[in-house]
Image (cartoon, rainbow over all chains, first blue to last red; front, side):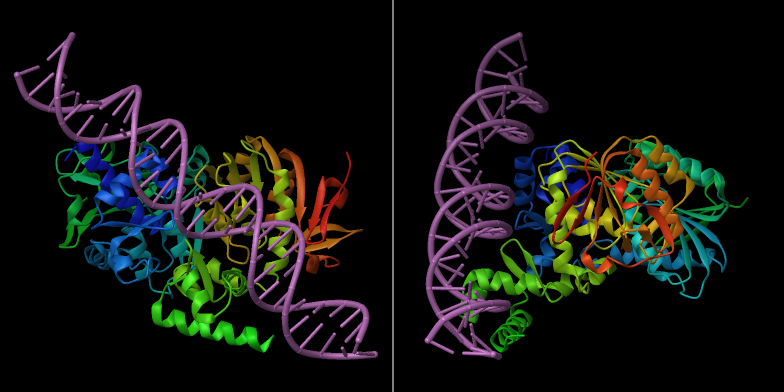
Length: 242
Length: 242
DNA sequence: CGCCACTTGTTAAAATCGCATCAAAACGAT
DNA sequence: ATCGTTTTGATGCGATTTTAACAAGTGGCG
């Protein structure tokens, strides 16, 4: 398969797991191609995607006759992500201030937070913010800016400045690529900027990745692995002393 | 409610629980009424049903995972709000930069935006942001800060500073109270601060309120009525020249 | 009965979706 | 570089969806 095409399919898959429903126009904008190309991609991958009334939905949803119910089970790596996060909660304590990165893994961590913990949460992605608003004792601080559909996140100088005024106990970072020699990378540069700033403000930095990310490399580098206090995959925690 | 109508709603609900998805034509056949009537039934019961691409689906499927949809569906003044907003869209033009206030009325306005309009949208409420992300040609700027559950909005100095750097063509404001002598008021002071700043940056300021707000008074004053270029209720537009 | 508000059906128009077609661009191999 | 193949983008058109407007029907009530 054409590598460019393969990348589009992957990106579409990512975007879909975030939004669960994508208007074709929106998808075309995210992927930076024409609507027609999106249509062709979708129909060429009928095993993954399906059309429904001008929108794209995961094929698994349609099989159930229910195009909406975004089963989080539809996310192929859901089990792995949940497991990653179950290891991660031990780093969170009552009254902590926590930074939550964007991505598809982090929302699972939010769901696992005990309701009785009083936390201050910092985030910059819409899907993460939404989850956090459901936690009764969480004080939520959102970093605003320009919206990026691919990651449902925001970027802007005001967010970076806000970070400068925050004390963070633990920062949970995600990465689209993890390479032992080239470190942690993500797809977009604006994300990398926020990640770096958040890490510099945090006492502890934890990287959350399911193993499907290992060995991959993305354009925007944001940290080498030694800078993390721990790297958590579904197999467990790897701590870096010091 | 008309007994015949009530029976149709029940029958539709039954049919939906069996099929999970119903084509409008199919539903019309099952109920023995015209398509148009089915459409009216569905949109009059947005708390139970929803449209999607010519089909009817249970609203719960769409609302799942989305707390704001719920509150919106439960909104008793939904019809009035929709009507308010239908009057309001005439103030929006292609390529405009629009400020969207928080509240339950504004999301209806977002839904009414033509998809082909290229807009820059400024907002500071989670429910509004969410709606805006579904618009394909909208560039979204979010003002971040501390989250306030009551209005699903954020407040903070960084948001106010961001506003200072923005040129706004039209600002749509909402109010929890409107009094001809004491002006427009809202429940929280942090909201009032953002509203005032947004109004000072906008070429045109439009107040959107359903008539249930008229005569009410809330603690946080943010503008007298003469400062608005128009006040829109479900009954129509009242313009203030100059 | 006649008036009224409300509901329903019909029709038309507008917007959108889905698809086929064709031209341009990118790519690969010689 | 040149040719042929593949991929992509643009355009147009029919079908479908959605909305709006108007006409007809229904039932309550004096």
